[in-house]
Image (tube, rainbow, N blue to C red; front, side, top):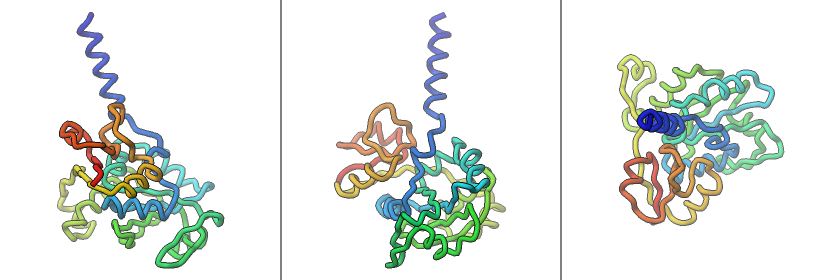
Amino acid sequence: MRKILIVVVLLVISIYSFSNVKLDDFVIHDFNNAIKIGDITGKNVIVMFSSETCYYCKKFKNEVLVDKEIQKWLRTEFVIAEINPDRNKKAVYKGKTLNYAELFGAFGVRGTPTFFFFNSKGEALAQLPGYVEKDTFLSILKYFKYYRNEKISFKNFLSKKVDVVIGKKILKLNKEDIDFLLKNDPNTKKYNKKLDEFTNVVMDEEDKKVEDKYYVVIYKK
């Protein structure tokens, strides 16, 4: 009986550790904050131009963004933001201050969802209009990680069946950047044992065990 209980407990822990998280625990809703987080962490940024009345935006969030494997990639290798055409919110892009409705126009967004991929310096890399199926979106995420080091077309990437895995990162940042991440990135948190391994954890001092478990570990310079 004791062995059965132990197995059940371990199974529950395993399921909990790999369960998906709420979208607001990793999706950002501010354009400039997303770009700055990408700059600080060296991650590519995905901006989903969305709308509250958009059927396919809701479908993407309900069917794709909730997927566990998709979430692992987005939380560790990318910064993702969803923005709506809100005239009361402002962004600064290429020296111009624009409300979010104007930002949609500046990027030529004609329908939602439309995805823009940026490098860590905030430079637009690619545009992807329309709803994307889960498997295709996962391939796109892996492609952009691979493309950072190996310039290749998406078609060739798929045909070669390149194996790409999530990498581990140890970041050493100044206090100002760490404070910004803790305030504005919902997936960056001060370390505690309850956090799953896809959280970007901030440590007060170096810890090899934490580095072995978590994909993104942040120390103060």
